[in-house]
Length: 89
Length: 303
Image (cartoon, rainbow over the protein chains, first blue to last red):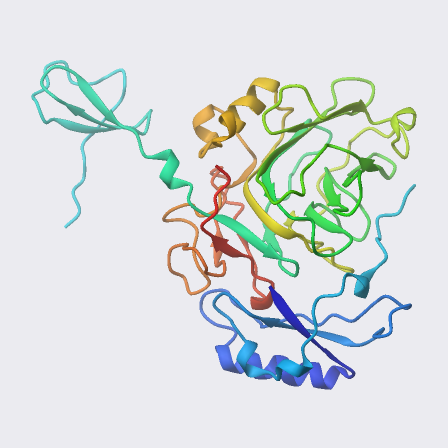
């Protein structure tokens, strides 16, 4: 399970991602290219619309849970992306 | 120092062997040993070989290099899934899509719905879909074997969905408006992009939360016998190839000596994926270069 931090600016997201890339030495020789991919809250009706979603890994080989402040973390919200883009014909 | 075992074939075994003679049989892939009276074959342990599955935590995805070269043919997908239904409203199990140009078949699910399967495939003029398919209980956090078969031998694409080895499909219908599909379009499109397992390739993501195992794509319509054999009374067929089937791509998950962890070592429980090998022989290996999106191996195989 992952936790998440919502950043208001892309610069904040980039700074955290750059720090995690440096922490894990990414890209490395095993095909691991980057820590995360940038994604925004795309549901215009959501109170966090437009914020940048940063994942916090809690298991596996790239755990970052201890690198961030727990009080900044939130759980996954399925309403961040609420609209399905499979369009009925 | 490795030992090279002499080779033979099942039809050219030595006529006068001595006890202890051993050969690798190139046609059957068996290791045979003569006990003084009979040839004894070593069959690799298909039960213990299947010790891992893949866990997707609701933000992961597996990027395959499998993109079918031909379209319009019959198509089947076999996989095992285990989910408690939590996670996002929409969750992709596998997706063949490039900016809405749907290919051979994609499966979106809506776990909170009583009709959670959402199938969509490309046609000659667009795509066809049914977003309200009910196949009974699947979000009970138990392993379920699912086989989806698209048969294009008739006027319309016939869709069947089998569950847990039952040779009576949970869903069986021609993909027509009279059966709840968006239109009567027959499957004809080539694959649009490399298949992604567990999420959406681009744009808005619909990540799956749960486990998957033994994912196989076939360029043919599997029969009820095939479905039953793969299910194998709930024990799972650890190696579909041994059933005489020829999947176009086959992700066994935790395939010993081929699947790797993210640090390059052999696949092991609790580790993020490195490479998930295509066991079909077609080399459509799967990876995930973004570390926060890597599924991880778990010691919970689907059998």
